[in-house]
Amino acid sequence: MKLKTLISALASVLLIGSQVAHADKWGDQFPHIAATGDIPGMCSYESMSQKDYSGRTLTINTHAIPVMGEPTALHAEQFEKLTGAKVEVTHTPAGDLYSKAMVPFQAGQAPYDIVFGFSNFINDWKRYLAPVPQEYVDQMDGVSASHKAIASWDGVMYQYPVDGDRHYLKYRKDVIDNPEMQAKYKADTGKELKVPTTWKEYGEMASYFNGWDWDGDGELEYGSAEVMKKDDLMYAAFYSRSVAYAKNESTPGGFFFDLETMEPLINNPGFVEALTDWVDAVNYVPPGGINFGLGDEINSFGGGQTLFSFSWDDAFVAAMQPDSPIANQVGAAQLPGAEKVWNRGMGAWEARYNQAPFFVWGWAVGVAGKSENKDVAFDYLCFFANGANHQADIGIGRFGVNPFMEEDFKADVWTQIGWDSDIAQSYVDTLADMEKSTNRVFPLRVPGTFEFNSALATGTAKALAGQLSPQEALDEVYAEWVSILDRVGADNVRDAYAVGVKMEDNEL
Image (cartoon, rainbow, N blue to C red; front, side, top):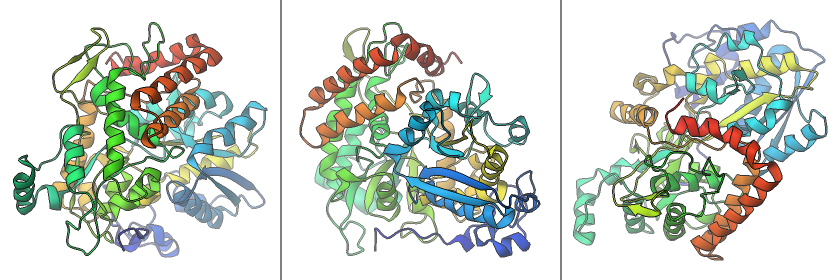
């Protein structure tokens, strides 16, 4: 069945990286790392087994299962067996992760010892989190510089790196590269079937391949799987669709706001064009697709139900797992661009090709400053991200643990777990090309981030449901963003936003 939960063939996940795979007592006791055995390090299985946390209770709030919630619970169970600690894990929907921690934080309480959320919460949460002790930072040699920066503020690491994220295009190579399908598409549309380089092409192809059995498996397939559920990360999907139309290198100084005036830009013609495309997308997603959250998108594309998807690595990795019906039949590419881009300085469209990557935030986790179990908490997080666990985790799509180690960006890392060499190379090349781009957007990391994104999700959801036109919906979002600025303080937001703008304008 195409929408089955993608149960990973853990025993088939081979060694990732340069260490030599070997059977050992830890691999025998813990099947999750059977392919590699333990990997030496500060927080290896062997090292953690020397700890005695008997009588200590660690509390964790994390995301719902499976994405990030499943590995949190798995590693908690392993940690308990190794150290004697009791670990209580609470699973919370994505839309509630911020408030589940922030409300008690503001009341002067430590709601949990460990709180999972998103990296763009860092500005609001940092005053309530304990900085990562230097002894843990010192053993992060393999973590990429960009992901260390994402976990830090003003040079202090507040979030423990466990994940790395970006959005890009995923597509079915067995369709897009199929000569018979190319000929049929040409005959029926007069256009070339190829990897789409614009959102208009994406929509045309997704519409054409929507609602018929184009892979001959006896089930209907559809055009695109997207995160459209209001309280389940949909705003990130909208930003990914918007960058092509609204991020213009000719007009530096802000994508979300004009940094000088702090005028919200969210309802300008670039964003409206993106939302217009997205409203059309409702017609080429699977049945119920307008209510897809991240887990649904992973299972839909990863299970072979759609031609396209775009979001985090999870759906691509799920599609490439040995138990996937489309293993080694998918490709990765940059997000589509557009044949025009809005120039806010001119107040007009520029008729030229434009493409921009969106360096979307990722899962993040920190230790409450008022926790009485900081030693246990940091050992747990260090264990979560140790070499053996990381190598196993990144090969399981539904886990939501994506590349953030330098070794993860090498093709042979992926060919060693069964990926076709060309697909592995295209995957790492896609990630590398994003890093090289000078026209890019980073997520909001400002006071009020959660409120800004929540307002955006509420407005765009009304447009997707047909309750408001794209312009009306984004005008409503604009008004709410102005209200948030008034409440939070425009100067406070500007000071934090300036850091992201400098990154986007290539000044950092």
